[in-house]
Length: 259
Image (cartoon, rainbow, N blue to C red; front, side, top):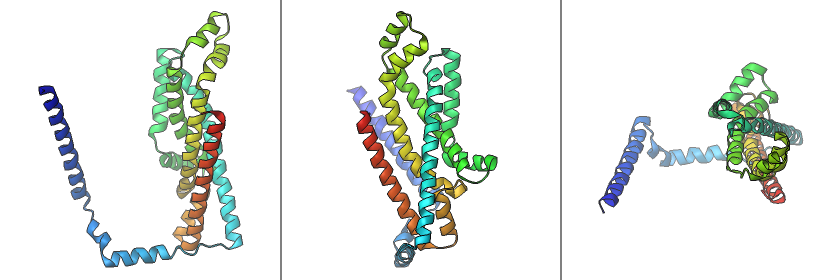
């Protein structure tokens, strides 16, 4: 009974601290939330939204949006493929396949890669490689390598070692034992993780254009900076359509692969 009361008291204290932190955050940020519900704010918001309609459907601009969408798709695909390859290479030592020192070193690299947000990587890559899709591809590949490498390593750690050990005991080289004993067990998980990250990268690739990494994001930033809301609306619709299409394609691929 006393233990139950103690747990309950701890939970109440935690909730109280959380509520106090939320209240303190609102006070510190000085957010005038009441101003959002005034008649003037509603009128201005309605006027702002109205400027985005109807979208710009001029043939030359639609063609421009189409090329930018293809560029965004290419950035997401190439970066995800590079990240899957890099993540697989780092996952082996991160899972302890090359000793304790290799495990700690690989995990440090993975933590470093994924702890830096994509937009920060994109800013750094724009400074290093210049404006354009190459910088966006490198930024997404670096961050996604850290994410996929950690997920791939966890899948390796949770896979049963018996098949690979049986092959190694029969005289098979370590690489052969991995490809025929371990990889078939983790491949569906690896594929699912890579496809999920591709879905996220297609959205992130569209945003990275705001820092000069090309694609739909660059076109959206250009339209908004010139207050061309109708063109910005067309770009936003293209982003939504691409996200829906990629989600559907990824789900279909996972079903086909049994992932």
